[in-house]
Image (cartoon, rainbow, N blue to C red; front, side):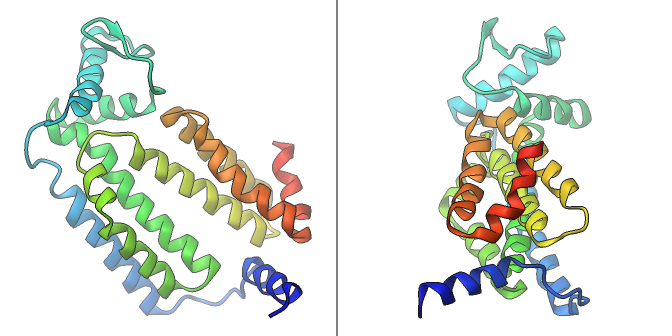
Length: 231
């Protein structure tokens, strides 16, 4: 296979697919994936107390913010905790307000982020190939040891992963769809901003690198992604 043929096939993959209604099988696979994620990682968040130092630091800082009404500066025992941006703390605070101060409420944002990330993996796989491959990719992610561990403890990784996946999804939609392209590219930057608020600049660097490489190697991508810079 020549390089020209490979380029053509990639460009055909990224171009806008025909507007055909998805088959019922697609909806069933998507629902199965979401149900599995919720069953494995949301339904089990109340199992056990906070058992690691990291969990205690994140949940403790969020509880202290609730008690002191200081929403911008996370602290543990009055000591500023500035290693990570504040979005995860804010989401834990919202969960505490809704469900009380407990281990399950502290873990809920991360567990929901895993569900969202699985959904986005399915959608990205569907856009690049087909819904079956998106389903398989989602199953692989759900069965990973890292997913099993990080979804059950209070950590920013599931959340930043979900926002970065949303960034990639918006970038792909902006590439494929001529209509509302600017709206999708706005979504790219918004999701990147939330990823940065979760774990710093890597929330922008990783997705931007993907589209930068596409723009370097493929002329059509370079032309279409110019609109990203207008934001």
